[in-house]
Every structure is written in C-alpha cells, then in structure tokens.
Length: 109
Image 1 (cartoon, rainbow, N blue to C red):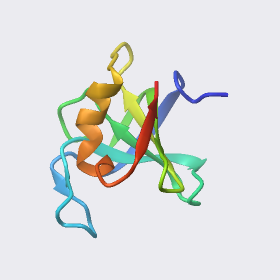
Image 2: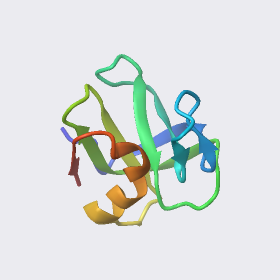
Image 3: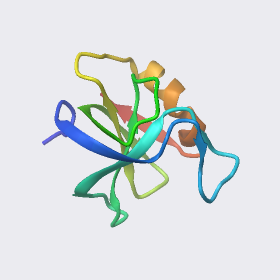
C-alpha cells in the first residue's frame, strides 16, 4: 500500500531558513521534519520535506505527494504539500536538491 495521497502531520525540527545541526553547509530553504510514531528503515521517525508553503512552521498537516527513494541509503524521504497542490518530479527535486544532491535517488509520485 502506498503512502502517497495520505494525510500526515509533520513535526518540523529543521525550519526553513536554518542550517543543518551537524553539517553547517546544508541550508534548509524549506521546512523539514518527521512524522511522529511512523518509523523508517533507519529506526528513526519518518523524515519529510514540506513544500508549497513559504514560512517557517512548527507543525504542518498536509498530503504526501511523493516518496524519494534513496538508492544508496537505507531511508526514504516523504514529500508533503498543502491539500490541492500538485508538483512534477522535476519541481519537487528542485526544492529538495539542497540535501538530495548527495544521494542517488528515484522519486515516486
């Protein structure tokens, strides 16, 4: 069963406009966080990018519009957007490239 199309709430731990806590060269132009109580293959709560909003937030409820499969890593990343917003794979990758550029990925829409 695919997660795409499901409603989730993302708790943001890396707000838009901040830098990665361990890699100071990674700047977050979008909000990034996790979905509480859903665990990824790395044993941590599921990571999610939030696209389609232009302000930093602490929590965000939206719809999963894509899954980024990291082919050279153990985890996938979810892409969450406001209800009714649609993006192409190219538009999504342009927004998450700040971090995904370091991995070999496939995107599922």
